[in-house]
Length: 191
Image 1 (spheres, rainbow, N blue to C red):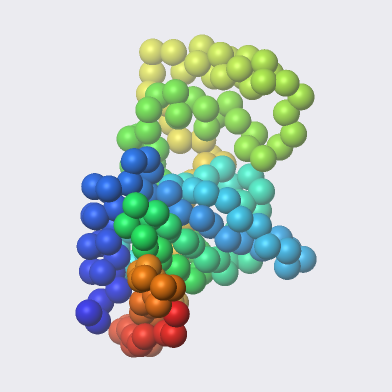
Image 2 (cartoon, rainbow, N blue to C red):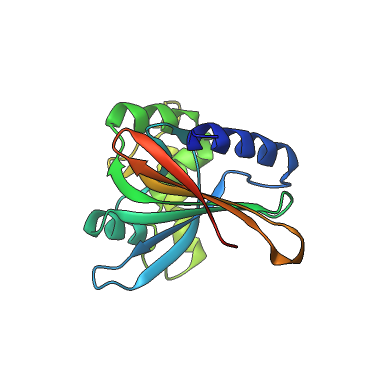
């Protein structure tokens, strides 16, 4: 196969059918401004030849790290399929229309939570967050919840995509695709 996005689509379709929860969960690796690695799970919310999209609070720790250094890595691990996909690339913000369209699909409570949360900031007590949520719920009662200005998405444009398939006796199969201008080159890697 010469198209890493077609292979991703095929594996992702299988993962959605076999994984018990969140087949779209992916580890996102960033670095702090001084080069220390940082890793967390996020959810893939869009993908295609132009990249892989996720959303977050722009003022969160990850938002700050992405703004300071756009180079990231993603990892999908589908234990039920004994597969993983590694993606290396850089991020750019999605446009407002894309962020607005996705935000409108979220549950109302998730939308309200985006307004109530100062993601990654210290919280003195759970009750403080719950009180902020109640205030936001009252503020937007009877109306659509708009996307907060500090909440948006990022698109990871891949420079490399590696597909890993578990095999017996740790004789795994690895295929790495590397962007070459507007096309891709691929090759096998030793396990």
